[in-house]
Amino acid sequence: MNYTQWLVNRFPQLNKVSSAKTFAVITQARKQTKTLRILISMLSYLVGGLLIVMGFPTIEQQGHLLAYLAAIIGVVVLFIVLSKTEQRLTEMVMKQALLKRMAASDLVS
Image (cartoon, rainbow, N blue to C red; front, top):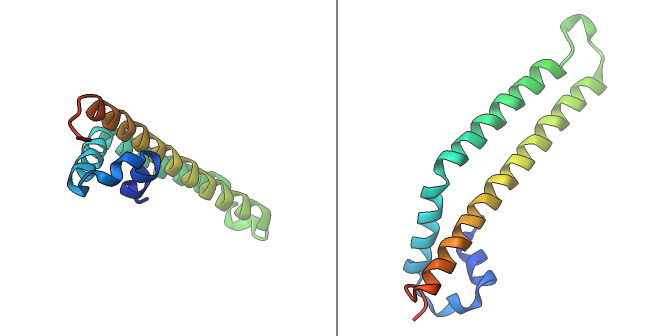
């Protein structure tokens, strides 16, 4: 996601702010959410792997296309949901950091 564009769309007053200051807010938010983003990624791989292992039928049960399809759809939905969760988390932290800087007149002058 292009966070710079998202911030400018969300806060139009940032059109006047240098991109370096905007990028500093983005970098700060990414650093603050690094641990949570890593945990979300690990969780997605773990649960995705479990869904694949548990969802696929054994070799003796070949021909169960529906089971394969359900497992694949489950993994895809899981990755989408966790990706959106990570994105929302980063956006929330960026918004809070930006509002604090704007209140302190550190960003928009």
